[in-house]
Image (cartoon, rainbow, N blue to C red; front, top):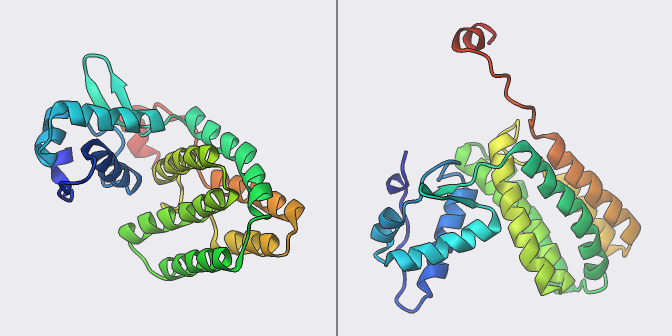
Length: 237
């Protein structure tokens, strides 16, 4: 399937066009409406959004910086298809960063912040009660939103931007390698982390975060492909 098979909302006249294209393509990639490896031709994207190739190129460069698009010389741009090693590096980075975010966030947690976290947990719970591919994609997104809320609360805008990149890459990795088709970023884990933050128990919150990230990564099947021939692959199923 090509990018032409996916609908995109029209751009508003007052929006920054490159950023608007970046946001819509980013959402489609994370939701896996655009599969890994899909070609993002500048002419085709430009025609869909009715913008110049220069505007499209700027949007694709932003997505490339986030790791969601790869550009190949003389071939163009494609939705990223992260390798198992790249997937491991994403979660290694999260294990380094998120405990530090918790340390900053725990001092800033207010009733309004608790309410936002609780609303996110309620949304996750509703999604978990439903079924279907679109719901699984939404569950992955809702799961990531919990971690982005933690980054926002920490108050470090540089790390918050980096977490947006890491969560986006994580969502793509989970959709690509997750055994269950949905995130193992468990609802119960999120509730426990929030409870520790509310009790001002930083050590427990950090321990739970690390366990939680390990839990997500453990659900991934990052084994290398076997490389069997067609006959062997079909007979071994």
